[in-house]
Length: 140
Image (tube, rainbow, N blue to C red; front, top):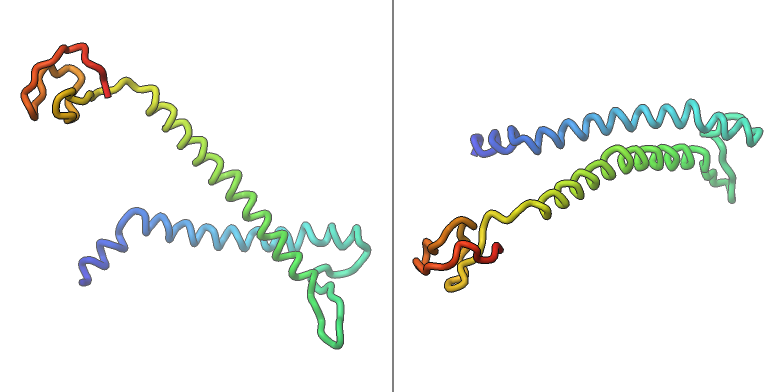
């Protein structure tokens, strides 16, 4: 059981995921600080209020901290934009490029017209049913 666990942990994708989570957490801290210390002070300077993270309204003796909520919301939007523009879009472009390249490559196999097995394009005889056919047969 320990060997299986060790094999699981040392897999490349598990290690990559762990690194991604750690880097993501560190990046989130940087974005939180950017929003709290740089962006929302500009918003509160324009709005004319003091500390934005303490902005609130009161309903029946209950305080609603909308300033802190807006800090978190802006941080989320910044992180989501960075992930979209620097991770999702490049991966989509690479996938599209790889699929386009794959479609334009010449076929290296064809189907036997008798038994429908897949054989190399250069073959003149099917290795499964031994049927003989023209070397110019259609590629599949």
